[in-house]
Structures are given as structure tokens and as C-alpha cells.
Image (cartoon, rainbow, N blue to C red; front, side, top):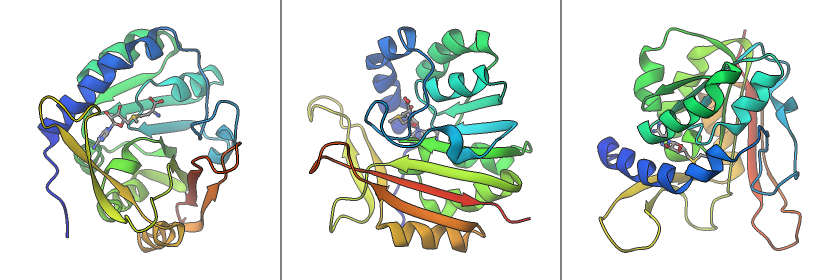
Length: 221
Ligand SMILES: C[S@@+](CC[C@H](N)C(=O)[O-])C[C@H]1O[C@@H](n2cnc3c(N)ncnc32)[C@H](O)[C@@H]1O
């Protein structure tokens, strides 16, 4: 059953997140990490050698800044106007372009294509993959890469999972994040037409800590 995303309310939630992450933007250095652990796991090589990228749900924009430093044409998309204003100031001078939009709406209308589309704990975690993956496939150049990372699903908690804004007090702002076993993510990707699909959970650097689900796939053509 699809869940009722209220995009205006989700925007408010992510604006609040952007306010609390303001220092992560102003004091940040460019860095590309797929995992939640500094210096752990693979880097941008998972994207191949792209000339152009789109990060969906780019948040602080640090990964895009790192790619822009390497000469990649880097575009980031985020739902939060507060975040987009902050990251445009911080990373715009490096040539990164930011768009404030809801990803499903944006990809339905955007005509641009990219060598890679990716999400790091970003929009691929917060959108119905049955809708998102088809749209991403249409916006990739032939052979282009789609990659995303996020926490693995909690055992037994699959599909859309409601998530309140932190604190459990104040306005009832919530969003949905999506959790599946790796083989189910792989099935969504294959159904959307991707090939060379690989979805796995990378263990945390400390045994027993939360790992990272990492998915990569290529567009056909
Ligand atoms: C956990 S944060 C991103 C983390 C990011 N990798 C970073 O380094 O900050 C998730 C981001 O996804 C964005 N987001 C969530 N749902 C979205 C949607 N439907 N469309 C576009 N962006 C979305 C939020 O605004 C938020 O900035």
C-alpha cells in the first residue's frame, strides 16, 4: 500500500534539519563518503568516471563539492529551501549547481541526462523505489550508474516506515523512509530496467555497529 507523503510537511521537517545542520555546511570540507563512518568504505569510484552527476537529496553537498573539485559537472537536488540556500552559498563558488525540488516531481519533468545519479542517505531512502527508480533510469546516459547508500532495514520492518522529526515533542512532522532486504532492493532495480545490479550490506568498522546498505546498478544501452 502506498503511504500518503505530504510534501509540504516533509519540506518543513527537512528545513528544520537544515537549520540544525547549518554548521555542517559552513564548516564542512569537501568529502565523499558512502557510509556514516569517516574514512570507512568505498569512495566515488563506485560512480565510474562520470563527466556529470546528479545527487538526489544532497543535504550538505559535501560529496558534490568533492566531485566538482575533480572537474565533474555536479548538480544537487534537495527538498529543503533552507538547505539549498546554505549549500549554494558554500559550494556554488566551486561550480556546483543546486536545485530546490521534490525528486519525483523534478525527475518527471527534467530533460537533462547524467552519467551518474546517486544518493547518500538521501532521497533514495525517502521515496517509493517503485516510482523513483524508473525515473532515474530515464535520466541516465546509456551505461550510466545509479548508486545509493543508507542504513540497512531493521529486521522485520520492511517497506515504508514512518519517522517523526527528532525529539518526539512539538509539531507532528514526519516523513517515510523505505527499508528492504538487499535482494528486494535488487528486484526493484532490475524491474526498472537496470543491469549489473549489486546490493549488499557493508559491515561497520566496529563489530555489532550499524552497517551500510550500498547499491550500484547500470542503465542499459
Ligand atoms: C539525511 S539528509 C542527506 C544526507 C546528505 N548525504 C548529507 O551529506 O547531508 C536527507 C536529505 O534528503 C532530502 N530529501 C528527502 N526527501 C526528498 C525528496 N522527496 N526530494 C528531494 N530531496 C529529499 C532532505 O531534504 C535532506 O536534505
